[in-house]
Structures are given as structure tokens and as C-alpha cells.
Length: 518
Image (cartoon, rainbow, N blue to C red; front, side, top):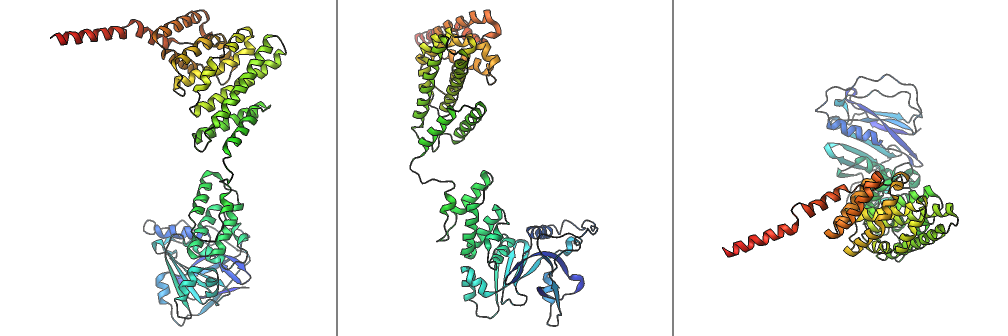
């Protein structure tokens, strides 16, 4: 059984704490757990705030810990200064189990110093003192050969020391616990096995300290771990990449890790995105197709056009044209009475595809060309009248989406295109409106009505009058089965009858003339 020798101190000033032990072929080294260090630091910071600790906890049944533990004797600064040459030596054995949980110490008695020994007891020939914040201190009993063999930093420092027993001090340690963990890894023959028990965040901290110490084998082991382990979430991925890019050590391979997030292929976005669009559009499974459309649109929205090939719009328009050709062919077949049920289902799919492609173009601010193409689909509009409502109404979703886009300012077609769009497709939309309200789950009538009204009000006043009077006849006959454009009607009315702009302009001219005469 391994032993650790500790100088005896006055009994009433002795502080005892459990410290985990990692057994190695060379002997053992003990490293305080993260909880132990954190509790010690937090307790030290709160000495002036708390005067009493919680009452002692009753003993609990015997438990087998996940690792072997020992009790380490920890003394305060004053006790360490009073130690003399007449100290007796006590031996503390490493138990296999813990009989009971020790009672919680009072805050006033918590230690400010922790002593840790690596390797065989009493064989150390160097000390490393880690001075953390708030005066917290960790004294490590280590071996020169181990430090020199693994660390460029320690090799340089020890070369400057002439004494047989060297003592090195590292001040302002941000995380003394990580330094202890990293130095402990110098005593491990299989660092990979040790790192496998840690999480990504802790390994990143170890990597940082290993670089400061010039511990090259540890750096490589950390990189191997990070290359193989999954990164959970975007935040963790960002931490890994930023830590890797900050590495300044030469001769370490970070490329395998960076390959996870970068590609060396030459200009692959267009071909890859085209393939994705094609797969989504041709999917036969409705639920999967709908979910992937939502995901792709969300990702493109987040990307906001960055790092997407400029000629990607050509791919979208090519897909739009294929869908339009398919819809026109299906309308012709349906008008001739060929396979009406199959045609109806496929028309709904193609209409949904067109609406989604229009969403993609609107996000990329490139939908004006589509509005021109759709406004000129006169043959499709004529066939629309010949088909049953149940077969045709899905197509009006495309018209609705265009009006919404114009109303929001997502696309800015010319005046002629806006007028042609209203002339060609507004009446078919009126005819299908009742079915759209009750047959499409995603149809938002208020949004569509607002978009139609705003589109009409962008036209010259004479065109506004012609379209709104046509709407008024349909609305009075159909009621809720027709879009409610009352807001647009009110705006047009005020523009036309309540002090028209022409009158205001004439009055302004008269006032100018009278002023000049005076």
C-alpha cells in the first residue's frame, strides 16, 4: 500500500480534506477534484460574510467511490511557518473504500494551502508552487526529470537553478486546479485514457495550460481528443475552433480538427445547393419534404446570402421554370379530364414547390424576375377558369405570396409588372379565396389582404379606381368569400374625393401667383 509522509502539526490547527488519487505505474499522484478546489476558493472569498456553517451531517452508509481517495493534511500559512526540525512523521495509507462522509468544516477552518505529492512518497526532488488568486496556494512535490522530459517551460526554469532541491513558483494562476491536472498528466503513460474521462470544456483548459508549459505531448493528446469527440451545440463548437486557432505552438497538427468545419474543395456551394434543392423538390414523402423546406429556408435566412454562390439564383430560377412547365402540363391534362385525382395532388405539390422557391428568392432579394414570369402566365390563367375549384385553388397561393412580398417591400417590380400581375391573377384569386381560407393550413387571410391592398395603392389613381371598383362588385356578392380590401378602398376614396392632390397643387400655385404679384 502506497504511503504519503506529512509533517505533524498542532492538532487543533490541522485541517483534513479528501483528495482523489490516480494510481500510475510509477506510484501515485493525487489531484483535488474540481469541486474541492471550487469549494475552497468560494469559502475563502466568503470568510468575512459568514460566521457559522450549517450543522454537521449525520454519518451515511458505506459507499464505494469511483476512484481511490486519501485524506490529505492541509495547514494554513501560520502553521507552516511554525513547523520545526522536531516534527514527527505520520503515514497515511490509501484506503480502498470510504467508510463515512466527513463532517463539513467550518468556514473559518478551511485551508488556504493544499499540498500534493506525485510519484513515490519521499522521492521528489523539486517543488512547484502555484499561487492563485485571493492568496490560494498549491504546493506540488514533483521530480525534475519528469518536468524536464515533458515541459520546455520547466526545463528552462530548472536549468537556471543551481541547487539540488529546486523550488519553482508560478504566480497569478487563473485556474490552479487545471495546472495540477496538467502536471499530473506528465506522470501518465496513457494520456488519452485520462482525457476520455473529461469533457470538452475541461480539455480546452488543459490545452491552454499545456501550451503555456510547453507540454507538447499533452497538446497533441488534447488535439486528438478534440478531433474525435462530438461537439455539442454551436457555442461549444465556437470555443473549440477559437481555441485551436489561437494555438501558437509549432509542429502540432490542427488541420484534422479544422477539416470538420472547413472544406478544401474548390467552389462547391452551387453544385451542393442545387443538389439539395432538387432532392427537396422531388421528394415523395409529404412530411419529410415540408420539414426540409422549413430547415433549408431557415438556414438560408440565417446565412443572409453570405458565402452562397452568386449564381445560385440561376439554379432557383431553373427549378421555378421546371415547376411552371409541370403545372402547365398538369392543367392541360386536368382540363381534358385525364386522371383528375392524380393531377389534383400533383398540382398541389408543384404549387407548394413554387411557393417555397419564391420564399427562397424573396430571402435573397431576387424575386423580381419571378414576378415578371408569373404575371405573363396568361395561358395558365385561362386554363385556371376551366378547372374545378378543388384542382386549381392551390395555384393562387403563389399569387398570394407575390402580393405579400410586394406589400412587405421584399420585391420591387416595375409599375407595368404590378399592373399586369393584378390584371392577370387578381380575379382568379378572388374566385379561389374561399377555398384558400378553408383548405390551406398555412394561409393567412389578413396578411394576403394587406398585401393586395398595398400593391393596388402603388398604382396610378385611375388604375386603383378600376381595380377597386371591380373588387367592390365581387365583395358585395360574395362577402367573406372575397378578400376584404376596405382599408385600401378608404385610402383610394380619400385620395380621390377628400381634397385631392390636384386641388392642393392648384391652390399652391394660386398662392404662389398672388405672392409674386404683391
